[in-house]
Length: 244
Ligand SMILES: Nc1ncnc2c1ncn2[C@@H]1O[C@H](COP(=O)(O)OP(=O)(O)OP(=O)(O)O)[C@@H](O)[C@H]1O
Image (cartoon, rainbow, N blue to C red; front, side):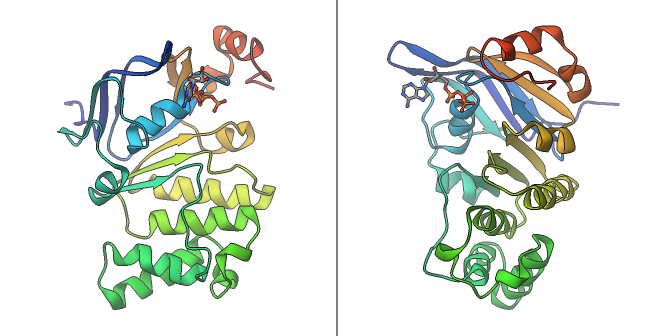
């Protein structure tokens, strides 16, 4: 059987901040419909790599391709317009509007008005936040806002979803809901998740990329990553044991 054509690739991607090489010649490849978690100790370069993919940072050199198209250095909104759902660590919601209005507006990017309404209702239901539909998002708890934002990201049915620390600040129940949502999304879309929360990672991760010192250190199934001595050592040098 022939290899699938990747939806997203990077070739020799480099991001330098002055003398610091945060991303060091990274070759990365993601297949359509694949769910990939990016792990690594603090300062490994995950967030910087992610920000290059999302257009938050312009890489120093190298290439990023989406469905074969060179998108290196593109602005975030242009990447979103190609059908990529992006959730960064910086919240991206209209605080003065209701959860429903935020999600409906996001759905309008892809759907006509009546369909956008239907889609917004469907996303509220899927994300378990129907009870928050009429609430102003600026007044919601952090985890609730994260779920509303995820609903806005998924509402236009993107073919590729990029999530930076989506479980941050969530309660256990919210995190479980998020894990189910990510797994469900990955049935139709490719998904990249950067996350520190190992309980969450254990629930969703399959094939996983571990970064260290700006480069890809290991790529393997999560079970093998968890028991990999060298991976445990890079974590032990920096923070809690990956297998803890
Ligand atoms: N804006 C910046 N200016 C200068 N150096 C930066 C900047 N952003 C990141 N770095 C450096 O780049 C390296 C990689 O950082 P990055 O935040 O990408 O790592 P990370 O793996 O995402 O870490 P964490 O898990 O703590 O978020 C670190 O040495 C960091 O100090």
